[in-house]
Image (tube, rainbow, N blue to C red; front, side, top):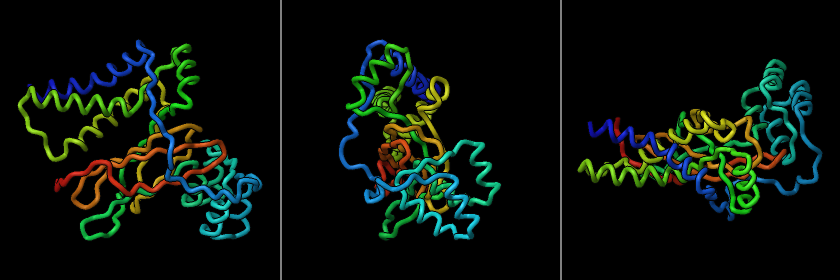
Length: 268
């Protein structure tokens, strides 16, 4: 019975936070100023825009994947069409998955440093992106969203609510905090925010899986500010990583998630 009430209470968090947002007109954003872990080659800002046609031309010319990817990386400004129709066409013309990932607006790699000091990738980790708002944007964007009745929910707000709920619920149930409580808070907050986004505004959320080396790519990410949240395992540890990314029109961003936000030993 305690467990049922506990889970049911968590399921109410997203709705409660969203309702407070709509009623109070609160700015659901946080400051994203500061250094972002993004790789940008500033020397190429004035370069010619790179397009699907350029990639296809290199494939037909017989260049290797590594040569094509290097060319893509040297062109910061790109106008790739990564719609489902365009992707199908690129694949049919022989463009590899490796090259398609390099064309994506947001790519990254997630790994952790284990006790031995070695770097281990988070194999097949679950990667999620949630749209967030910077304080610079909030004054105008939030006012427009409120006026238009656009629903919004920030992952960080759900996480804070989940954390407080866990503390309160465990006290009432007289249950001691487990070693994975912080990780569980992220898991619940991620699930609730994703469910809310899917029901209200799917453009605020995206998900994918990392490969065996911890690499991931999102082919469709609208310009804006995003929170990248990863749930995965490294060895016998469950872990969560979180990083911010700013996507600009026509530019690609690559991030590396190294430091875990929360982790715990879990042999299951």
